[in-house]
Amino acid sequence: MFFYYVDGVTCACARELPLPRAQEPAAGAPLVWLYERSPEQSRASFAPCDLRQLSAPVEDVRFLDCSRLESPAPEHPALTAALEARTLRAVNYSHPRWRELLRPEARRGKKRVNLLAIGDVGSTLLTALVLTGSDVISEIGICDLSEKVTARWEIEMGQVALPWNYDAFPPVRAVGQDELFDCDVFVFIASKGIPPVGSGVRDVRMAQFEANAAIAGFYAGKARAAGFRGLYASVSDPVDPLAKTVFLESNRGENGAFDGKGLFPEQIQGFGLGVMNARAAYFAKRDPRFAAFLTEGRSFGPHGGDLVVANSVERYDDALSRELTRRTVEANLEMRALGFKPYVAPALSSGALSLLLTLRGEWHCGSVFLGGVYMGCKNRYTPAGVQTESLALPEPLFDRIRSAADHLAAIV
Image (cartoon, rainbow, N blue to C red; front, side, top):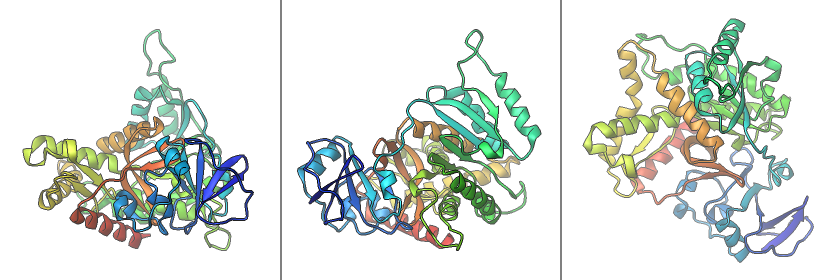
């Protein structure tokens, strides 16, 4: 084990590096582990939940079940103490901007949130953030292609108030295109070409990919140009491939090659799994066969056909889990069959509620970068970085997760 002192931060690595040497840190003191993995396939930084994540040669869905990682964990009392104290941070030494991540910029206090596109989903999400987000949000900026739409919602939200407590809710103001990334959280809700109700399109989410990818790529370039360091929340469908599109396009240099000068992969999170998890709970409450999901279940994967719902992790039943998954995936079709667009639950469960849990540093459902895809799982943002839950997963369940990751990788 080698210890280094870089830019005022104590680091550790399993091999010698051309960096200033340092003494071993005190037990529980903040420590950065330097690892080396492909910047295009791995996060630039994260908060480990298991020391085996530090030595793994590649980053993939096995991080969701660390017992499947084959590399032995690096052993040192300083690492163990820092992990237990939650002061251990892992940084990818192979990333061209690794030094920027030694001291992550953490803006304390309430956050500024900007929303792009105030349609059905955006307006519902906005309303929920205003009413329930005052503990973590200082201000909400809104922007839409239609200035009339932006003006409408600025007026509407400006007239939502408690009597004699007129500052109870975060203020909402219109922001221009040049201000979109002057914030802590940018929420991408823009969408184009949603198949109309009755169109017969079954995979509505993937039908939107081509059109929405072009829009997402455009704003990824704007995020790069602005040097954005906050959270880029991908809410538009298909959530997970669009998150990957944002990562790739923001890191594309003038020659079209990956240069690592855009958004770090952990800056981007897909917010689509929240509603799938909520839909699974909806059916679990109404059918006693699925009741175990409410206390023992989990959801993984994308907001779409490759979703993986487990009725229980400890008492996994593959047939029940696949049936619950099918009903969850097709729930939006039931709403469309009634003649309505299924946007309220996604705007709230995947959007507003998940975003607020994220800002509060609490566990939530969202898609994080693992092995070159954005994979939905239980995760949280900590002072040391993004942390994913690791559980002992039954083989049939893990096979489904791995298959979902393979399918995502084939999309983009």
